[in-house]
Length: 95
Length: 486
Image 1 (cartoon, rainbow over the protein chains, first blue to last red):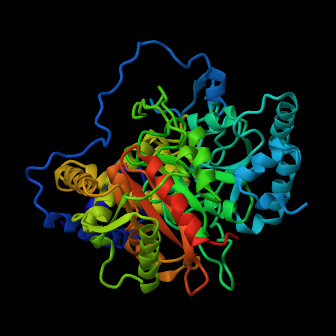
Image 2: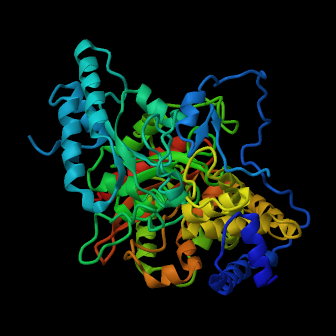
Image 3: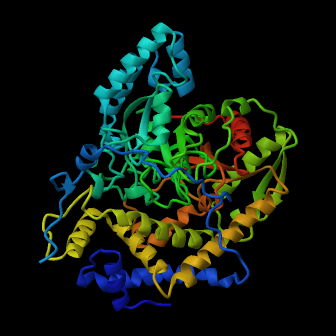
């Protein structure tokens, strides 16, 4: 399943990354190299194989629905690139 | 007195207990080594002042008889573990100003046992790489380099190099596809990735959550056992943490190996395997045989597909984990913000992430995208089952598996063939990734030097949660190999 330039652009947008126009061709070739390599997996028939999602087969633990680590707004906002009025600040996005 | 930084962590603690030197003296000696060893680029952030204060505290505890298991032991911490009030970068531009308001569980365990933190160690960006060359802070230099600067391996390259060059008594690493074992092998030190679920992942910057595990890198097998005692344990904050008792790993070191069955997987000896690597592998098997172990050939038939499986699953999980870096709540935000919120995300992420990380995010996004999910991601999850089953079948016939850690020794920084084709770099993980896919414990320890004067590592793979047998056999192999550390 070779991919084309349009797919590179689409995947870049889905990833919220920019691939400069002059890099699209090279990116496509590199991806196709990797995907061709990955396609060796098709040598093995896996029709009746259960996918493995977690190695340790155990049910997820339930916990009480209560706050475990709260009241640290100030600490959290210290790492924000921009914060105002005790909130994360973003550029204006609504006209 | 001889150089106290050359002691193993165990002997350093003995020295502290016997008051041969103080924790402050020990920490200061490492701080001097760090200053003199800056050309290795092993540390991203040094915390000398903090470390000296911790050491003073340790000396008080030695004086009043309240010293804990690792009291005053100077450690280096891979810069992927969140450390409260100490910058944690994951070797990425996108996190280069991030100061965590909380402590990872593993490092909290070490602190609770009295360890001193010297600083944060360099790694491949977000632990994605096998050579430490993808770090935003530049590559680490392998202390075994002679005429040319060599890579330390990756991703825990700083952790392995710092131990080899005595810039810390021991260190923490993480391993998603070989990131503890490969650098340990390249730098002639010892490291173990425990069973998935043994060490909490809470507070470790996530790469591929179903594969990531923390573990120690140290001078020898006993040091690893001692450190893992502290690092391991159930944690409510990690839903994949296993609620099992952690045995005292040092209690396995003097065990008998008579009658234990050691499996050698035939698929790990492909046509064209480096002759020296093969010879050391045979030699290691002979050593174990001489001590009464039974060595037998086993088969892991889907080995060939492990790499491709890994390079679908790991990027898929990474693309999802790294979606959180948006320039809003923490981390790097681009100066020019554009017209739309998407523009801000795109600019921040494009400027903040390095090349290999972007490559993996995009591959991961592609294999998870509508129309391709079944063909790639689901297929890889099914292959993962087959690889897991291979090991479970093999462990019906053997107690432990012995393989080389890496098909090669450390290579030069900037190696063209590795940089030109990412697949060439990925191939170095050929002996290590299966272990992560199956969630098994595995250790790398140095076995000897190749003709080129560089260390080679052997890997011991255990049954799930049977780190004990790994430590038992590793201790014997270490005693017989008599590898001379740096």
